[in-house]
Length: 152
Image 1 (cartoon, one colour):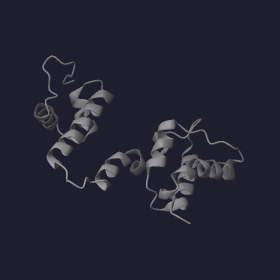
Image 2 (image 1 turned 30 degrees about the horizontal axis):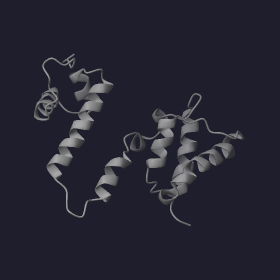
Image 3 (image 1 turned 60 degrees about the vertical axis):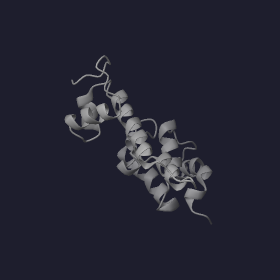
Image 4 (image 1 turned 90 degrees about the vertical axis):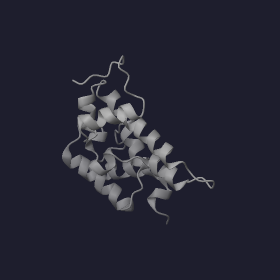
């Protein structure tokens, strides 16, 4: 039988199976973002890892549905898109500096959006100093003096 990462369409079915096995209820209430994260994940522990995840979330007592907050930290920060791009390296090569700048720009912008434009909070979210985020924003041309981005 192929590994779970090659049978991503089976993940919702398996989630419901394990949920029913543990609770007797038929349908696992799951947040769409959490489901997508589970589908994107590579599952190195295969089906057993997925079953353990359902058990873990139940023990931790999710409220009415399985959400991103219930998932282990390794899954909360997992991003399949990044590894897909690396796996599919173009035959003619890649401009690594431009690629990394685009990734950094996207991450910084998402952090700022999540923090309402507050650079200090975005820096804390990214675990970098305020000075570092200010430098990176300037370097990437995202540091508009007239923008709503603030220090606090």
